[in-house]
Image 1 (cartoon, one colour):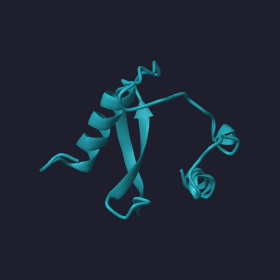
Image 2: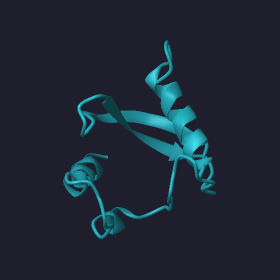
Image 3: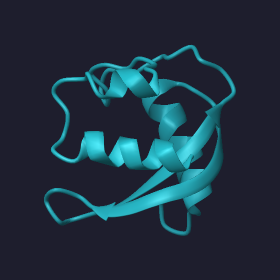
Length: 92
């Protein structure tokens, strides 16, 4: 987040910068500490206003839309991803 930036504004800006999609934040669903312990991560559900992914290759190596069911088959993922997404999408 930029100094003085609200989380909602940061998620809109970051998604637009990294994958070129305009989104509307719905609600914050999770907060965690980065694997290195140096950053607080804020996780948001959002609605996409468009679905044409335009990744900034300096920031993102791959981007694609997946269903909730497809998340369980993705490899590699971080250690807690499958549990995290399972929990979040059950509550969404």
